[in-house]
Length: 153
Image 1: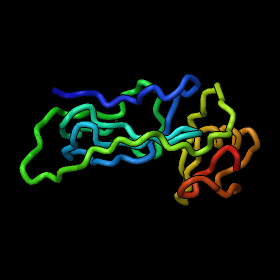
Image 2 (image 1 turned 90 degrees about the vertical axis):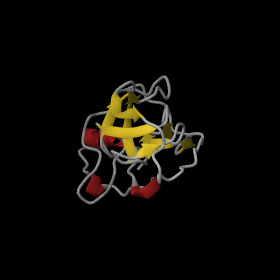
Image 3 (image 1 turned 120 degrees about the vertical axis):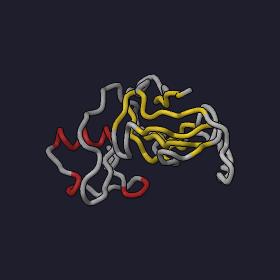
Image 4 (image 1 turned 135 degrees about the vertical axis):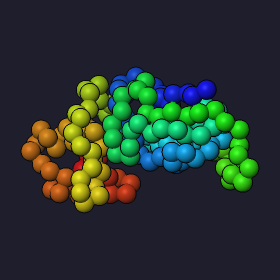
């Protein structure tokens, strides 16, 4: 039985997230409740746990791509732990807040590319502000984790 991996609702004003990183590749077995994908918003980064033991059969959204709340970003096929598979420790961690003092925005983020050839990553709200001011990612030094460009930059 295959199960959809969907973007969960993370807040009232959040309608879109950026795929931060997949913790497991296609074809890999994952344990229930182990973190399988990291999602990012303007204010927080959080992990989505596996809903059941299984194998990730398809990843629809790659790292750096945008996804709407409720959108299917991958598929997990229910499967028992194969012999010889690593025993991943299920991790349950609360969302890590990146910018607790930033005001909430009800505007929908733009669908601009969120990464450039130089490896910089632009958060959705920052991309919107940069577009309004006619700036490119090369014009702004990112101060977020991993050099990410935040709207405050």
